[in-house]
Image 1 (cartoon, one colour):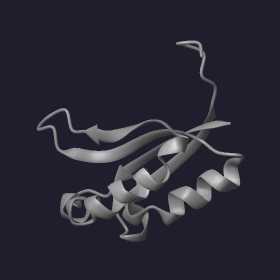
Image 2 (cartoon, helix red, strand yellow; image 1 turned 90 degrees about the horizontal axis):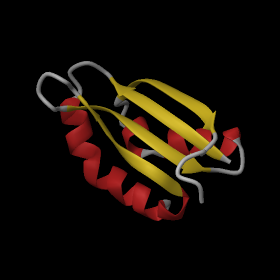
Image 3 (cartoon, helix red, strand yellow; image 1 turned 180 degrees about the horizontal axis):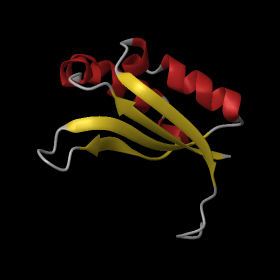
Image 4 (cartoon, one colour; image 1 turned 90 degrees about the vertical axis):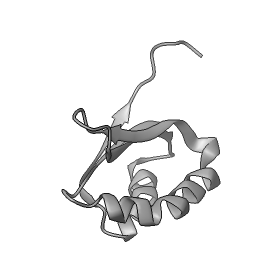
Length: 94
């Protein structure tokens, strides 16, 4: 099942994101077979990273929640909010 994970950074926390980026990228690489799409959300005004958007495959919501909780960004306290929603891929068809 696919899930969309939308995580919004705390205001003024770009330094936390940058300090933990390497560990976050390695964490994603370890789960690359589950990633449909992933990347940072950007500020319209200056292009700074302001959050994360991931579309991933998990067995269930509990697995998605565990993944999100184990992300180095989450462990570092980067996120102000995290939303996890089931998602159905329609286009392009597989």
